[in-house]
Length: 125
Image (cartoon, rainbow, N blue to C red; front, side, top):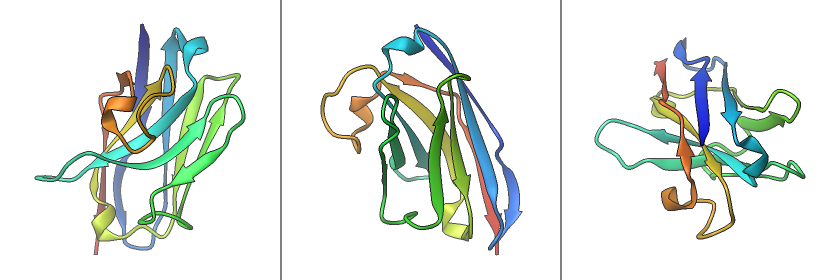
């Protein structure tokens, strides 16, 4: 079992920055990749960024490319999401998730086996 704990959410003005953290505990040695998702009220949960655990290869959704950066610290079993130039449309609950094996695609919610509880990010205009 893997436990994930997100932190770093909050209220920020448009154009500002936030850094989310996701600390993993438990069977993290089995993780092949991690992702950050977000879910706005009344909308589906969608992926924003993905990183492979071993090589640190990253992929981003077009909506955040150039503004968000995902990274991981293997020694701390922690993945980060640095969010810059935030926009009101970035407002959502942000979740981190673990892939234990490669199945489906990085965009698919079903490709991830473990999820954090989420952290709220609110961007005011």
